[in-house]
Image (cartoon, helix red, strand yellow):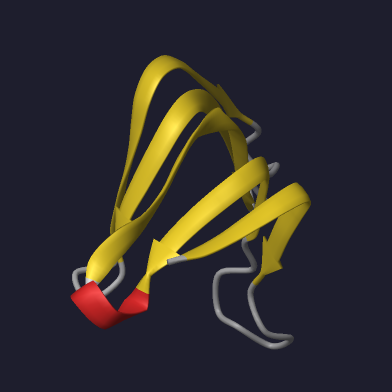
Length: 82
C-alpha cells in the first residue's frame, strides 16, 4: 500500500483536453491488488466550468469513473456563450 499524506495534489498533464485538478489531505493506493485509489478525507475536483467537493472518494481508473462518498457539493461555472 502507498499512502500519500499532507496536501495531496494531482493535475492533468499540460495540453490535456479536460484540464483537471485533484486536492485532498490523504490518498491510499494499492497498485499490486488493482484496487482503486481512495480517501476518507475532503476532496476537491476541479475541471473547466465545474468544481466538486465531498468527503470520501474512490476512483476506477480503467473505467475513468469516480465517486464521492458523502457531503457532495457541485458548483457549475458555465462559460459565457458567444
